[in-house]
Image 1 (cartoon, each protein chain N blue to C red):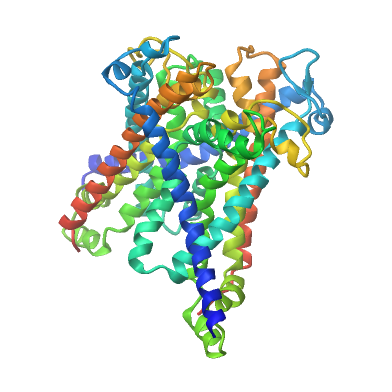
Image 2: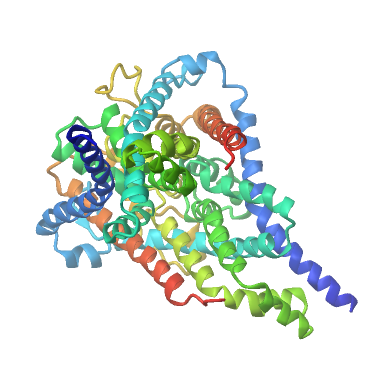
Length: 300
Length: 284
């Protein structure tokens, strides 16, 4: 091979390597930008005030940057969505792997996946335009913006995540374990609940955490349906679910759409919330990965 | 015996109902949306700019904005995504850096989309001093968002090319790059294309990152070039759900949603047809 084409190959490999390394650059940029701007923010607002403050009024005087009301809002959506997606997801996983025929599964599984493919702005519309008015017939005190209908749609959109990862875990449980159960005289539901599910538990728990992490980062559905009212709600009080709240993501949208200047503290607070959000989802994803790897039952 | 049979059956029904619960609910919501869109969806809607008056309002500028942006995302993400996938599969396998990059990619895929919006704002607007809210910034931001999906799909497509084909090419005296260009890539193009189209169809539904980079909420003229300010379909839908008049929420927003879903559905259909077409043609 002549020198020229050798050089050409080297340049090409270098280009390919650059493409791959660019993904590392993306992660580094995310962290650098979030940290850099957050530091500027924390030079104006103390971290103690940010993390323990109970009022969030970034654009209205007197300015206050307590992130707790937003964290509570996010928590409400996450809990509500989890209450729907976790049971529905795990039961779907059981049906798809233990009961459905190959043909039924080939029809239902792609349909279930569609739930995760619908744009979140459309889910926001569904919640605000249809689900809230229906719920209002049951709960007349319900506000137009409320945490309940937002968490319902977020729950629906994360069902496929919980279902598909749980299903993989359930499918990995060897047949012999089930047969041992049947040989002992156990019936199918009992085999599923006392043998299959416990054996697949690490994968199932990992799927819950991943679904929860998706709910934490969800933006448009909660912005449209739950409104933009930062409020220190009581999660255990049903009345508070009928009222408008504000999640961390919705607060970011609100600041992003307002005409605050790039130098203002409100603008910088965007990055502080972003950093908190990034840290939360990163922690959840990592825990999910560790649970899956560390507590995985190894079958031969 | 009997009661046990019934409880077995009840348990199965419970799992079945849980499976179809979301599907049925979504279908019902979609039917209502399509029903309400029916009276609003016409040529005038597709060719007019937004307006304060519902009967005059249309979706043309954001529709064109979305199309321009997605075309650009495709142009940006394919070379980088496929390049990264080739490197990871053909040159880097087994190396430590490959392992690190792959873990990093799976982490990036789980970062909330609004964080990518902040990344775009910090990287392209604050650092590179591009104007906020222009087509180019929107495209670059969404490129970063879908890059992990494009890379993973391309990796899978490249991996599915049998090793024997590579060895045959090397055995005939081709260099590694010649083998990749003439043997590996042509065989993996259908898989790559399918993955790219699916990733683009996800990008076209994204709203939050566009809000963060300052895309216009309402715009009356379609973008002229990549440096023009723009709005996108989901942004316009978001605006219409936020308007006080009933016609916007129960008329224009559903009509916009139908247009958005129709585009996504056709992209998915193209991806499936492509995959099936080549699956028949390519047999190892």
